[in-house]
Each structure stands twice: as structure tokens, then as C-alpha cells.
View 1 (tube, protein in one colour):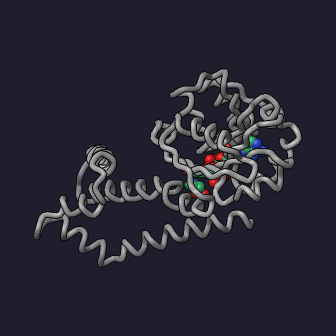
View 2: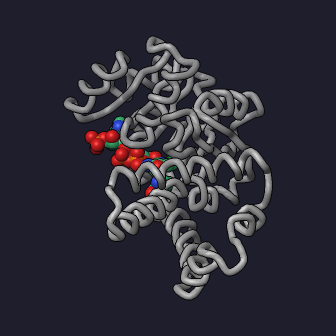
View 3: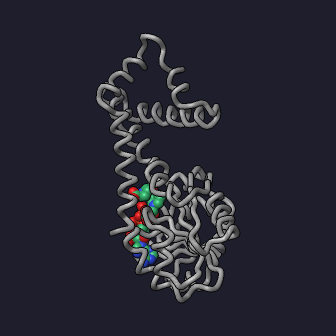
Length: 264
Ligand SMILES: NC(=O)C1=CN([C@@H]2O[C@H](COP(=O)(O)OP(=O)(O)OC[C@H]3O[C@@H](n4cnc5c(N)ncnc54)[C@H](OP(=O)(O)O)[C@@H]3O)[C@@H](O)[C@H]2O)C=CC1
Ligand SMILES: O=C(O)[C@@H]1CCC=N1
């Protein structure tokens, strides 16, 4: 039995992605404090929404998707309800396995995971790092679980804040670009739904090229950039406005924010 504690944006994306793939409704429990949202989840997914203590007792894998600052109180609340061998997987940005372990009884296996919202459609990207009591079997269990909603890689924990900045937050950067492209089309007089369709499929196509060809992005970009053409004109403007530096700084800011979340 799997319990998802905290079915906000990320928790619900994982829930929906899991139910759409390998998991039956009776294999998944959810904890959500707001009764109105709990009722929506029951109606939408046909799953049991139960208090966190009950979830901790019944599940052998807990997937914690609360905001980082809500995590310590939750861990202290559920700690003594866990059975031997219950695996705790946290998706909270910034919280180290050491910090998570410090709020749990000794020897509870903890895995830190950083997924992203495309898990909702089975296209998630998750990185995993095990804590000091997580053995190969626990990492394997976490990998299997998150593998139902996309790709999974295992990394040393020291990379997890960078993962958070790249693939955890990453979908938002692409939505930001997509939104800007749609607005540019609208500003030039194109109907909004046409601009959205052009952008949507261009994003899908570009992603498929990156995955499918295995080429470096530079090569793919050069292939689009005809000498003296439109793309060269556009890219020159992006460079003139410092977009490359802005992106690098943005990703560093996200990494630093992730690091600081463990202190707050
Ligand atoms: N959003 C994303 O793309 C990603 C988020 N994450 C991580 O996922 C976590 C959740 O983020 P996100 O989904 O964006 O945030 P949300 O605020 O959407 O979700 C948090 C959820 O936890 C619920 N909650 C609060 N306290 C408790 C409790 N004691 N027991 C059970 N549920 C509780 C909240 O309920 P209520 O609203 O009623 O307070 C809410 O539904 C964060 O730690 C974040 O770092 C990781 C990767 C990507
Ligand atoms: O914005 C956040 O803090 C979370 C973590 C990664 C994506 N969303």
C-alpha cells in the first residue's frame, strides 16, 4: 500500500500519474487536511482519503508531498505509527535526508526524491538519493514507484539542489517561454488559439528531437538557423538581451533557494 501525504500540485500529479499507469485505486491512500479538497480527490480518483496517522499505519511506502516547512511537524506526528520497514520518500525541495531522519525514529529508511509535474501525464523526471538507513532494496522500491510516472535517475545527494533547479522547477521555465511566444503571436495579430497550437506542437516537436536524436542542443539549434535568416535574427536579439545569462542566474537562484529551504 502506498500513501501520498499532501495532495497539492505535486502530490496530485503523482497520484493521477500512478493511477493512470500501474496502480489500482485500492493500492493508494491519500492524506489531505482540507475536507473540501479531500472530497474532490475521493470523487475524482475513487481513492480513500484518511488522516496521516492512519496512512502511516496502513502503508508500507509513504510519499510525502507537503511544503518543506510543514514536513517536520508531519514527520513527528507519524513517526511512531510507522511499521518496521516502512519506506519514507520525501519530494520536498531542499530538505536533506539527514534533516528528514532527524524528525523520525532511528533507522527509518528515507529516500529524497525530486520529481516534476509532467508525472501527471507519465512524462515525469525524478532524481533519487537514499538516506543513511536506505538500502538498495529501498532505492529499488522508490525507483519502481516513481518509474511508473516517468524517468528516474539515482544521484549523490549533493546534486539534489541542482536537480531541483533544473528538472524540478524546469517545466515552469518552458511554460514561461511558451507563454511569451503565444503572447508575441497574439501581439502580432494572430488568434490566441492558433498561437497556442503553434507553440504547443513546436514545444512537443523540439522535445521529441532532443530525446529522439540524442544530438546536443547546439547542433539542433544550428540546424534551424539558416544563414542570414529569421532564426539568426531572433537569436541575436536573445543574446543582446542577455537571456543566456538570465537563465543561468535563474537556475543558480533556484539552486540557492533549494539549499536555503532546509534552513527555514
Ligand atoms: N510543484 C512542483 O512542481 C514540485 C513540488 N515539489 C515539492 O512538493 C511539495 C509540495 O509542493 P506543491 O505540490 O507545489 O505544494 P502545494 O501547496 O500545492 O501542496 C502541498 C499540499 O500539502 C497539503 N498539506 C499541508 N499540511 C498537510 C498535512 N499535515 N498532512 C497532509 N497534507 C498536508 C496541503 O493542503 P492545504 O492546501 O489544504 O494546506 C497541500 O494540498 C513541496 O515540498 C515541493 O518542494 C517537488 C517537485 C516539483
Ligand atoms: O517551486 C518549488 O519550490 C517546487 C520545487 C521544484 C518545483 N517546484
